[in-house]
Image (cartoon, rainbow, N blue to C red; front, side, top):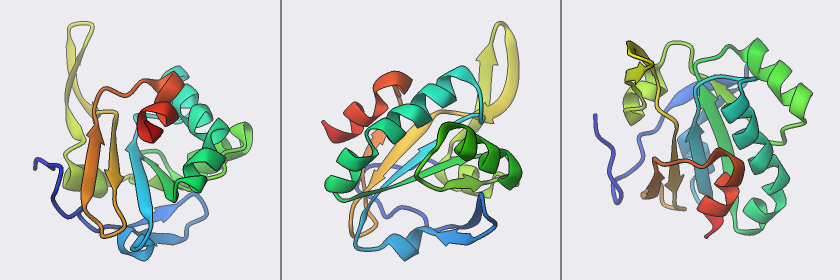
Length: 149
């Protein structure tokens, strides 16, 4: 499935690090940063999460809600949040259902090997639930800047 700018963002139902159910539709009326990342506690993902944390107030001031999502478990997300003091929820998409909806679970090539994995992508969703921007070339260390530009 290919997601394009201008289309309604697919709604989803998934659990966050505390086991609470999160749906995209519960944020209607707010701008949402929905960022897909490969794995908790890896260098790039940690840099990205910490950059969003460090710029969290600026994102809130612009009216954004930040939601991170990976295929890690709720427990791994809890540890990641505690370790780096992350102020936003992380969604545990262990069944890859949300990844499939957004087309972020793809065949990847790394060092001559092919495997399925998360393609790091951020979707900016407007107050009406429409995708206003897709950031596919994520710069992990300055990701907030890419969003706020």
